[in-house]
Image 1 (cartoon, each protein chain N blue to C red):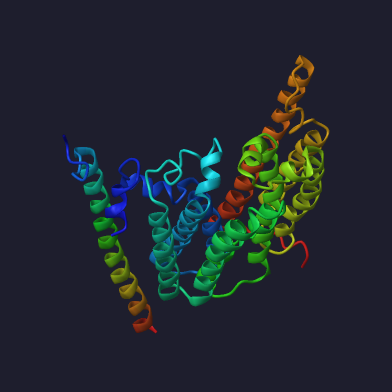
Image 2: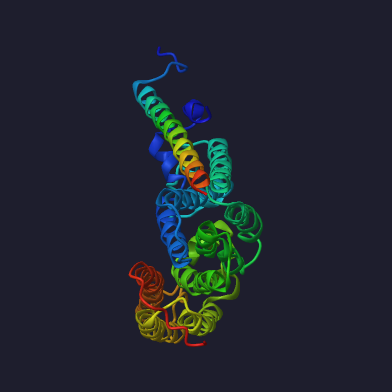
Length: 47
Length: 323
């Protein structure tokens, strides 16, 4: 009898997909904050 | 973290695409369009990257409120044909995960808007999310037939947020864009609900055709159309719209009114349970009139905003008929 707590192949694939999407979201967020900071700093320095 | 544990008790494993669906991407695209129109019509030069960030924040804020709505309304969604395949009622995503996503994205969009643009725009965005998720979803939707009239404010605010993001102010013309979407909402949604009211009735949602009946709904659609169409001409008088806008608003408004009159004279939304051929024919004919107004309302609003956007991008002179 199979263990119901054990992750199936479909569940593992879905989890990997969610984790990759979350990682990409976090990386994009870091890049976004960095570029916003540069643009805002640049505008203030120009003043 | 919440995403990673969703599979443990949901019926099927949640894919990342299910979390995208929680954000209602189609509604997001409409909000992006109207928000962008407000931002461009403000006529204030801002850094293109910051403009893109403002639009991103408006889109993510809309997605966040959609996710909160799907968390709270899962019981209603499960009863309606149109919404029962959504990730939460279908069991692919747990309600708690939809709530978490909504709260996190709300904070992200408001804070980023405040830091990258200004706090007036951030405050308006926070108010819009609160209004949709709490005032509309939690209070109005299950309580009153005026739910989409008052709740329509949430959908009408994105151009004001876009304008505030660009300039840090919200003048009369920004509120005019908001008023146009606000007055457009009742005829748009009620014409849809005239041929989907059985779904709302089953779910216990007091939409106007369920509470006041089809005839009253058709009359109210006409009243709102009579208020909405002249309002669409107003931007040509306040220095917002040009000659092309005035032509589009006038011609489209005329078609809108004709379709509303045709709808009020039809039997749309009536005849449920009729068994004879004449009755069934009436139902089909009436539904067609409601569908026509619903479809044209989308086209008309899109044309109005696209014309304003085009005129401002091409730097065409506004009319200012009042000055």
